[in-house]
Length: 114
Length: 115
Image 1 (cartoon, rainbow over the protein chains, first blue to last red):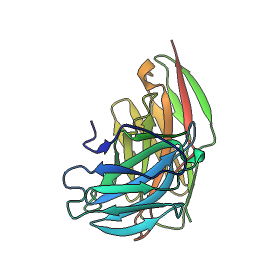
Image 2: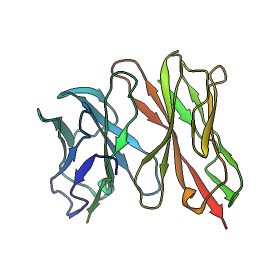
Image 3: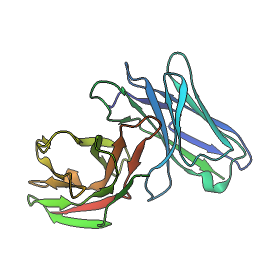
């Protein structure tokens, strides 16, 4: 158990809908990352937040947005969903100070768009 | 921008044998971190080993060790005494120390362990 929690585990929704994925980082970790992994594909970095502020952005679609709240949990919002958005969405957290820069991943949220 | 290459899409190893997975990266930075992550069929991402670029000594974690060649920008993972549970996708990752930069993952190597 990495200490990173993600909810829900599975999500099935229809095209055009909007969903919210939630992530709670490990205790003490200030940074949260979001990744998308399609079937048998690598990890696509979406966005990073550090202590409530956006720090880095990857290939995140305009239909997607995220935020990190004062208690450091983060939400990824996906709207106007398309079939191609079906994927495993990972959240990872990291301390980002001292010598602790490794990421610890949550179990992922499997999104199926029908 | 940094890139990470894993030139072996698939590899296999006999149980109890040793296997080495390759990773090369491209960067102009001098300070960074490198990681290997394992993704078994459960699809959970598990940190295997980490290496700080400023350390010359190669990292070791039980049966897992790395061969870090900074000048060659190479970071290979050696798995000794392979076990069936080692079967997974292995991702090499680069972590920049520059603000606003981020983790870059390689495409992965799928390792099969043969009984």
